[in-house]
Image (cartoon, one colour):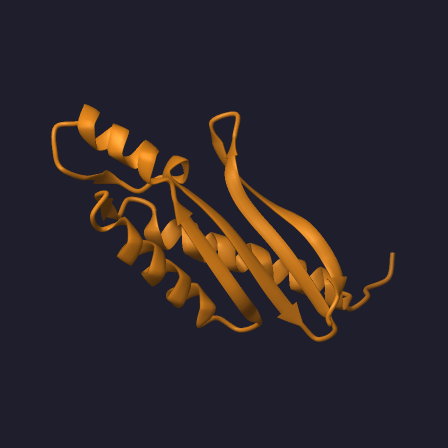
Length: 120
């Protein structure tokens, strides 16, 4: 089988994976409370948007689940894990836009490509 260069859609999907790996592993374990959730979400978005080809990032911290976890725990905060946030990001690479999302699926933070389209 011969070597070929990746297509633009393949490269854009790779970039989405890089962004998710960076986002999740950089912020997992961060102390978070209901009061600090909005600023943490904004910091996560801004950090990932700095990376090449990242057109947008939306982080939604699930504040109800976070509030419940804090109420059930021994402190006024808990650590950020995948069960407390959802993400949508868009990658713009050459003539391709990739949309990817992270959400809980069967107790696991699943990251997946949800759309690949020509850039508008």
